[in-house]
Amino acid sequence: MSQPLENNLIFRPLRDDADRERFAAFNAVCNNPSEGATCACLLRHHPVTTTLDDYWIIEDTTSGEIVSCTCLLPWTCSFAGIDLRVAQLEMVLTHPAYRGRGLVRRQMEHFAQTVTSRGYDLAIIWGIPYYYRQFGYAYALDGEVREALPVWKIPPGDSDRVRLRPAQTADIPFLAGQYQAMVGALNFYNQRSPAYWRYMLEAAQHPIHIVEDAAGALGYVTVSRRPETIVLYENGLPDAGHGLALLQHLRGQASQQVIIYWPQPAPLVSLARSLGSQAIPGGQWLVRFPDVAQFLRKIGPLFAARLRPAWKEYSGALIVNLYRQAYRLRFEQGQLAGVDSLGFVDSSMGADGGDLLIPPEAFVRLALGYRRLDDLFDAWPDIQVKPAARPLVDALFPPLQSYMTTPYYFFDNG
Ligand SMILES: CC(C)(COP(=O)(O)OP(=O)(O)OC[C@H]1O[C@@H](n2cnc3c(N)ncnc32)[C@H](O)[C@@H]1OP(=O)(O)O)[C@@H](O)C(=O)NCCC(=O)NCCS
Image 1 (tube, helix red, strand yellow):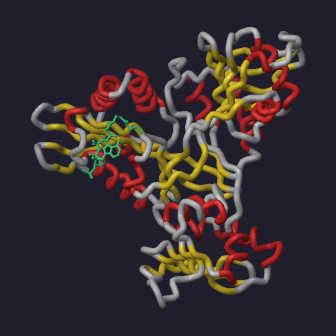
Image 2 (tube, rainbow, N blue to C red):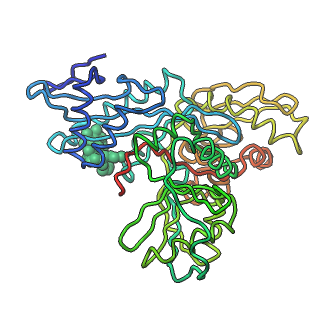
Image 3 (cartoon, rainbow, N blue to C red):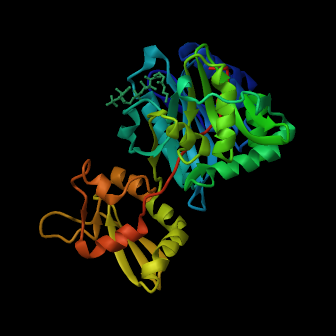
């Protein structure tokens, strides 16, 4: 694919090693060196199934320079036990002299087409506040939340009860086990293969450390030391007792505070909270369903499990109307039998628009369990639900605990 655009620009994927270097250099110069290092690391070492076709550039043929770029990073995420194929848009950048001309808009269209043609279940972006709303993305999953714990709130204790050592590739089975235990409390998380652990340790140089005592390994933390602060970017420690020993070990090494990244159910995070930490919101992932009907079909087994307690005999239909596009969910004996796309269904005065009428952004939050219907009415007073359908809607879409990180970045100790 190579597509001419107006003003002597062309849009194309990367082709060769020279393009790899230019892509990384463009990001280093027009964004910052750290982003450039991440691009170089991804393009040389990314273990997941990315190819050069997943990195896109717009070039100015008059100068031969890259003026805008994006890329697609694929993930497999677990959603309440269902594997979802997720496409993340990354490395979004336009040269300052070319901004505001729709170059990222063009690439967003291509990203949307790619995500649809490859059958991804979700498209996600972590990025510039507000910008991606215009492309149909909704804020719907927590990320980058952390606890700030002043060191004086850590009770003094034996600072040598545990120690830290840099993790090696031989530790990967242990790391994978601890990670799985940590994300086990979540209904949405990113799966991580052994190859991905190797990428993080060897290529992206994440400062992952094993927490151990005299008897052996207890867990792990990704730790970065700054002048006044110690940052724990990730933690996989099975219990608060070992967490306290770790904090006491770190107590003398930071003059001000220890920052501990979520997920919220992690024992170390609960411990920090109990010691008086303060949560710093990090933002939310932007999410879009490329194909709503496909997503609903995919999570059909979840609907069956959710209906089992009180609705296991249920047969009937629920019309969910996203105002521009409506869907009929058909249930037979408590199982999802099908999802029909109904197109536009009028919901104006005098029309029966369906059982649940809900704007698409609000539906993303509801369907992912990020918020309950009651929590959504405030920002979306245009949600309507027929009273008779309300118990079924509540049963199908319960609130869920979720958290997402995609640690693809090169760790330059920042
Ligand atoms: C944000 C950025 C990528 C936009 O690139 P761009 O090629 O100028 O974007 P486009 O022209 O395709 O933008 C599409 C629309 O969004 C608007 N827009 C641009 N930046 C915006 C912003 N920060 N917030 C809201 N709207 C914005 C544009 O004006 C345009 O509107 P229009 O179609 O109504 O005229 C560019 O400013 C950039 O490279 N910034 C620095 C790097 C960065 O922040 N990257 C994102 C990391 S997630």
